Length: 238
Length: 238
Image (cartoon, rainbow over all chains, first blue to last red; front, side, top):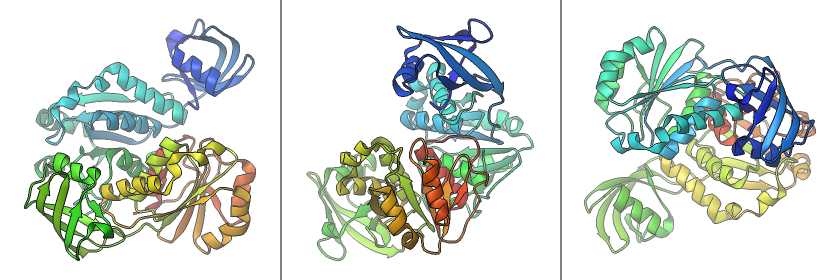
């Protein structure tokens, strides 16, 4: 937690903050070992970054006087369509995507996604937001990514993808492509990444029919949680 | 486990393999759901990749007839000096580094590394090899990375680093550098990455005195396990 993310409900007026949830309070008291008078990096969700000076710590509560004066880091130019990973991998992937500045994430059903994954408690709005907040707090960002579900592959491809991707560049990571993944892409880009085991050939074709270019990282098969930062680093996400 | 990594002691002759350890046997029987006659991707540690045809499965043992005919993927041109991460992060970092083809890793003491980390059971040779094997099995590689410990910062810097790094390019990841991390570096490269909290300024200076150039990824602070694949993707590690 390199930044403490604040929400409107934490504010009693424009500069006074009272934190009473164990996660942030314990982090401030146990990890930062902060005391009254200390100044911590804070940010308002979807707002500016600044400093919070601790005015009081008592019985599970932290009061701060907050000044927010700096915009958060620039958002990534990359949006990500991700074959729904299994729940533990989803957690780390959401944290990584949020930390790396991706602001738009589609979780997609595909043939190699186990249908049961969609029933995971990890997909509740609260759990998803929790992972995103962890990623933002790590990288000192405040802008919460939007996460949407595409629970049916074909309707998403046929009815939504063209509108969604628009005129952005479109890449799909695919180990068996002949085209090497490019570096340092400055233009808006939609990046599709398959689930464990990859997309089926016909799913890949369906993306390519809609303007996506298959790109490979070489012969190595990477886990999604490794492939995501690797690809975003290569493409110059942030 | 996209490849089953074999060791010389698994071979009863040049092509006959008997696996009796629960980890690989259970993976073959429960995850692959393999039966006699099935062919699986295998590789010999530090050797070639090929196929293993299952000749028998019984009571916790798998017999295979193995043919190894393909070299493993090319090694990365990047060696990594890593401020020793805390144990769970070390596990994932070693897996990631092995999966991404890095073959030489130095784990370095620095001021912000808690000394107790060096006592972690995670640093035994067996545990380190286990994480490396997981990474290789993921990415279908066979070449085990070398991992060495530099338990004292100054002696390593003063007595070993110049010889170690030689004439390779030298970069040190540092959030407050003015130089943006380059892309797609083809030449041999030594990359230094600090522990959680980063290197001290004087530690950074010590690297720079020895020819390292500080490079930044922007204002985002990333966890080591995210920063590693991100940097290796950007630098074109594999």
